[in-house]
Length: 309
Image (cartoon, rainbow, N blue to C red; front, side):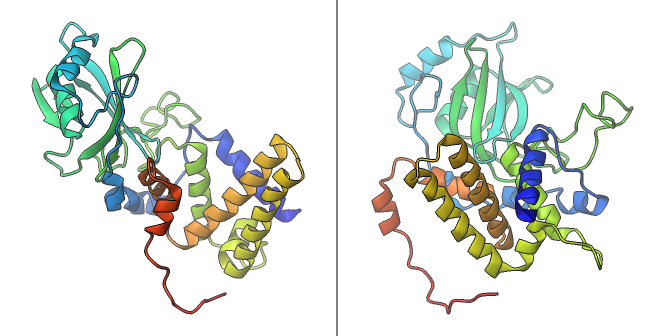
């Protein structure tokens, strides 16, 4: 009962606050100013993703004439610009919003680096050309009105000039948001997080928070402090997930058991210093590859002695 209550509270908390953020202390804000996983990316994240011009307009080998035809069809404003939004392909975080002219969009399609047009400097610029924090574009998506684009990519480092992972790190709503309090909404490196990443932040918070003597630790903290129990629970929850199919227990039960598997697995990943974006990048790197072939090409497992505890 205790563990289910704790898990339900964790997941409900994450779902309810998905568009919001975890409040960080001053020391945590400083430590998180530049997210480690955003700075150093595995080489596999540079793997190309190829698409057509319907919605996804990235094309590795598109003919120049087809690219120009696509550019002709964009609805530019009176200054010859369209909105260009950069989004992290692994976390889903909105990194920044800028504008792009025809040349900038063409450059992004052909060179796969997020490129914009600076209205203040009246010049084209590639994100990272000064800071070194480029955004490698994996695919580009067009909105229904053809006046806005999304650059889905992998940032080499912090996107914001402040050193934050994303430019959208200040909350507007809430009791102390920018719309409620003058100067509000500025809480360091906090950013808008989806449910999955909100849960990841909550697990990390449980790991770092002090447990006072005599206080009962949370279920998450118990798992973090007891790897043997954690691995036992993951195996148990995985078995219960399989039973939902074997016993035809229905969609709701399957979703519930999968939530248990995901939560416990994320606790294990936290112990090993692995972020969800690293897992998603691995999955993305396997797109278009046979599962049998991919597994056969994996490096052999280490022959270190099995350790518990």
